[in-house]
Image (cartoon, rainbow over all chains, first blue to last red):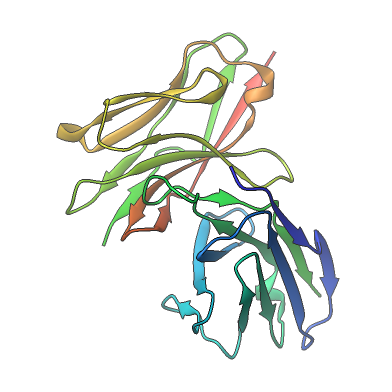
Length: 116
Length: 112
């Protein structure tokens, strides 16, 4: 399984500011995923990040609010822009295994964001 | 679109008792089904997955799940609960080749 790290592990931010979350994988992967887990709720896919192309956003998520970079096959960033308290969530990145079942994903430890 | 329903946001069992976490899915095509576990302040860990092979799937930590197409279910069980099993459990179905759609989660509480 892939080893995935995220930075920061947690942060407390003021409304109106932006935070960039980093996701690092120990192997090269084509696809990376970003999820949001709001307090007490399940995970919702924000976007799929492919290296060398624009990220694909799910319904309800837009690039201006959640810009994503994917400069190489082991790294991605998610920025939460112009934050409001409603953005307080855990943000997780995930990757599929190099060869495996469609849908199987390995998750990073998450970034716990609190917006005041 | 595919979806997952987890019955019961909280399940409480005594240590040593049977664990049963329920998951029903909706899918227009043969699904890939997953159970993930999230321990407090940690990320998600894959427990087990159904990939259209054996209908009874064994996972880590003594958990298993049975795929029942007629009931569109994929319930998670463990014969004997341990205190360390206390966590949040998520059922998920794959949508498309790699997307995952998660259920709302079930928090398992284990009492001594």
